[in-house]
Image (cartoon, rainbow, N blue to C red):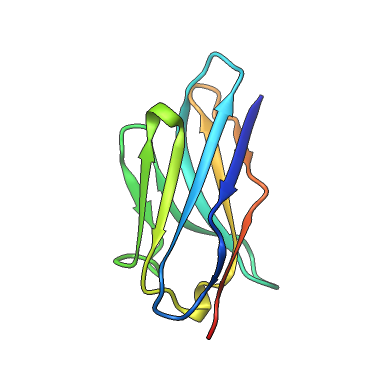
Length: 118
């Protein structure tokens, strides 16, 4: 079993910042490998925002490069998404997922709403 919980969403003005947190836990013998942030705007498909491996390798969508930073505390199995210079088009439900090592089992969190509006 894998459990994923996101937090940190909210309402922010354009140009502002938010930090999202995602904590994963597992009752299996496997460790958490990749953790990722995705987002889904109304009437749009879910899209990649950023991912990070347990060794710290990161990957970003072009639309957030230079503005968002993903980081991770392996001891806490927690990933963070620092979002700066937010734009109205960043408005979406942000979902975190965690992938178990060896099995590649993937678990999604429930999502957290981010709204960028004046």
